[in-house]
Image (cartoon, one colour):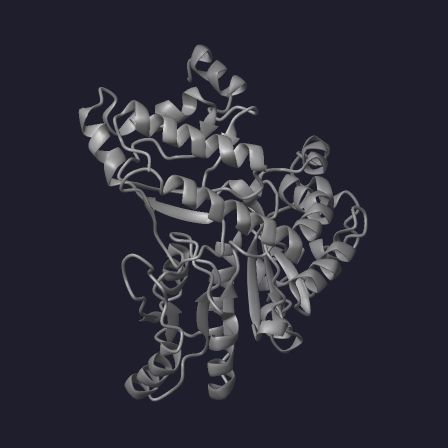
Length: 400
């Protein structure tokens, strides 16, 4: 039997990052809930709560709440023909590998792809060939090399890759890749292009079909102000029938069939309550914030922030310059040297930021770290920069 006193701690869990903190966590910034999403969080927090009026046995057909209309509008927003929710963008990627590739196939991916792209390939017994990047400090992908890698796969296997993957914005350096360059190559080779937009759909303007994507994946909890796990998988009409295939299996004794269920999603994706409700509730603000003028303002903020951070001696932003995205990795050898002399060692930066109510830098990070300024006000941007500079000065690091 579990000790009742031990059980008590589970009933009163609280978060380390408090509500009044400025959160610059690299994977949390664009997932912060809107006021509308916070409201529906309690309304639809119960499991299966969006299924009160499920009349046809499938999530995407529900009208109360307006899930069917929402997915229609989400397709318009993403610039695709059809959309389904998934349990995160990683589930969407896994479905793509399962549906379009066969075991032993070779898929071309970019060398900055999210680790779940690699795992999706492994899970489905698919091999990969990477498009290289140019290394430190820009880590810029050689997008023209997609053609070379497609030829390489063809030479090795006697057939073209079943599809290629391009990460629109990589999760380490925030480099934004030109989808049109790769989509033109894919069109020439008649190969479908899968775009991982986990860090772009919901934060910046992107229309999948306009840039040549056959499949576009997004993340609700990373980039669309939703509680997790939830993602979106958008396709062209050409691929919709195959990816959203309905069940044909029949019980040999009972003759039971589930003809309306989309079997690659196990009937319905497991986002029955809070994840989907918060995604829907945040959608109007997400549409607004991705307008070009709003994204341009976010880019002005991160460029200002990078300039201020690089005033600290030996601090440098990695990735392609000038910055095109709010996700940024900094190389910080001067802060690392300071940590070696500090009583808190590698945790000194995390704790110093916490004192000024700034959260999001991983504990133990001082040699390099990632952060994301998305959604911060100008006053918050300036405060975070000033706090970093103050910490540097307190540790005898020069500010230029």
